[in-house]
Image 1 (cartoon, helix red, strand yellow):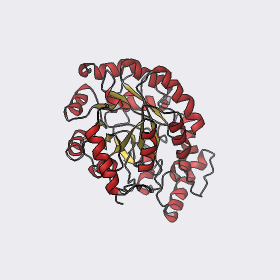
Image 2 (cartoon, rainbow, N blue to C red; image 1 turned 120 degrees about the horizontal axis):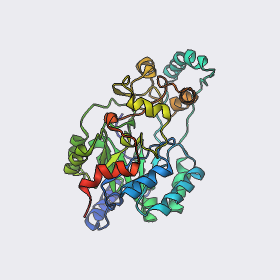
Image 3 (cartoon, rainbow, N blue to C red; image 1 turned 135 degrees about the vertical axis):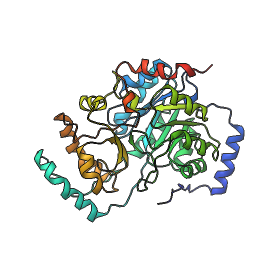
Image 4 (cartoon, rainbow, N blue to C red; image 1 turned 90 degrees about the vertical axis):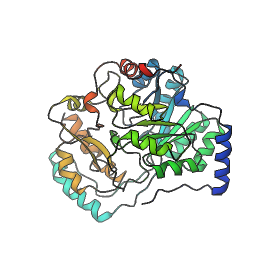
Amino acid sequence: MAVRTPDHAAASLGDRRRARARRSEERTVTIAFAKTSLPIIGAPMAGGTTTPELTEAVARAGGFPFVAGGYLTAEALAPLVERMREATSHFGVNLFAPNPVPVDREAFTDFVTALEPSAAARGITLDPEPVEDDDHFDDKLDLLTEHPVPLVSFTFNLPTAEAVDRLHAVGTQVVATVTSVAEARAAAEVGVDGLVVQGPRAGGHSGTADPTREIEDRATVDLVRDILAEVDLPVAAGGGVDGEAMVGDLLGAGASAVVVGTLLLRSDEAGTAPTHRAALAADEFTETQLTRAFTGRPARALVNDFVRTFDPIAVDAYPAVHHLTKEFRAAAKKADDPYSLHLWAGTGYRSAQEGSAETIVKDLGAGFARE
C-alpha cells in the first residue's frame, strides 16, 4: 500500500507547496517540543499507561509531556488536557488519525476461530463481527480547536491538510508521526510543523500510515538522518532508546528532542499494569517482536505464548482485532497472566528502571540541557 497524501478540497497540491514554502521562509517560532529545558519527550502511551501523574512528572523534570488521546472520548480527554494546562505551558496532545484498512472477512473469521478455545477457557464469548470505529476523531479535533493547546500530534496516519489548517487557525502547531522517508515527505506536503520520527524498535504500536507493510529493522538514528536529508522540518525521534548514550546519538543526528516511552513503563507514575511491570524485569522474557496478534496493527511486545501462538495467523484488521481481543486481554490482566497479555516493550526494555519519572527524565536529559 502506498503512503496516501491526504487531499484538501480548497487548495491544489501546488497551492499547498507554495504555502509550505512561505511558512518555511517565515518560520520564526520554535517548535513546541524544543522549548523545554531538557530535550526529552514523554511518549503518549494510550490506554491508561500515560497518566496525569506521569505527564506532570515529565513536565517537572523539564521535559515535554504528551497527553495520550487515543481510546478516549472527547469528554474524557477534556479534563486531562485542562489538568495538563494547569501544570505547564509546554505540552502536546496525541490523537489517532483514522486509517481504515479493509477487513479480509475470511481471514478474520479464521482468526476468531483460532482464538475461541483460549477465550472460552476464560469464560469469554467472542463476537465474530468486525467492529470498526474512528476513535472519536472528529469530536476530539473539535475539542482541540475550540480549546487550543500548544501542539497536536497525529499517529496511525497522517493528518489531512484540512485538519492541519484548522489547528493552525487557532495557533496550534501540528506534528505527524512518521516511520519512513516517504511518510515524512507526505507529511511535509500537508503542512505540518514538525515530525516525530519513530524507529521500528519502539515499543507498542507502530505509527506507520501503512499498517499492512512489513517493517524492516533498522537503527532509529539512521532513519533520522535519512529523513532530515529529505525534509526540512524539526524532528523528535524515538524507538529503542535505552539510555543517555542513545539520547546523545539521536540529538547528534539532528533531532531536537528524544521520545521515551518504554523507559518510563516501570516508573512510579506510569499506569502500567503490575503484570506488565514484572514481565519487563523477568528473566523469562528475553526478546521483543513486532506483532499484529493483539490488535491487528503492528506493535512491538515482549514475546509470550500469545504472540508465539497467534502471530503466525494474525490479520491486518485494526481496530477490529483490537476490539475482538479487548475482553481477552482484560481477563489476562485481571488473572495476572503475562503469557496472554499484551506486554508492549521497545528493544531497550531492559534499561527501564523503577523510581520517579521525574528522576528518570532528568538522568536521561541532564547532560543535554538547553541553554
